[in-house]
Length: 210
Image 1: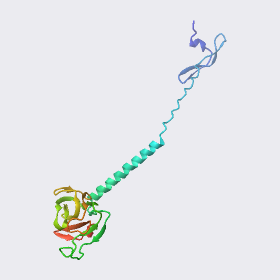
Image 2 (image 1 turned 90 degrees about the vertical axis):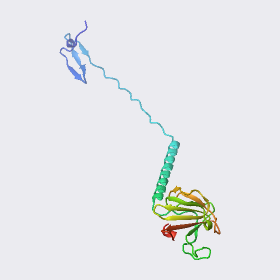
Image 3 (image 1 turned 135 degrees about the vertical axis):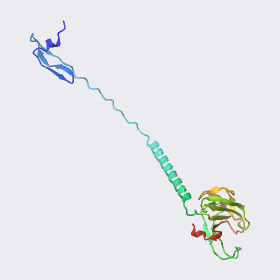
Image 4 (image 1 turned 30 degrees about the vertical axis):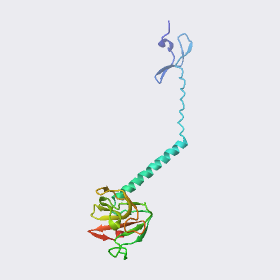
């Protein structure tokens, strides 16, 4: 018959450790010494997890792509700011001014120059100075191919001697939008943009608005 725990521990000592019954060296009623108790559990080995190695080249490509996206985002923000600004956008680029407002001369029917000339290569883009509506686009006699834009503030701007136009009468345009290209049509001695600002029916000095 299997001995009961009570018989085994008679005259001995007992302790409860972490919920387990642990018996030390105890003596039975017959004087025999028994070593009883739970054996210590074997430690469980923890598996080491090695983090994945990232390819430095892929990391570099991702960083460059993120930088390009950030540059494009900043560029679009600048363009939106320009197009909503109240100051006029310079109507062309890569130019030099060759004739100024009020300059006297026999080349102009009024006896003086009514705008500001921007000499530039044929085909150089021409931009709308402000947002507005195209009220004229096409041939304009001495002005050659020309465009007139009426802006939301009531001011009009005129772009003359164009090689080509990219908008039509009735179109809405944004500030800085390409509307044509520099040329030498009409009363012109060489490729340039003749730019006028008209306020309350009178030509004004464009330099005061740019």
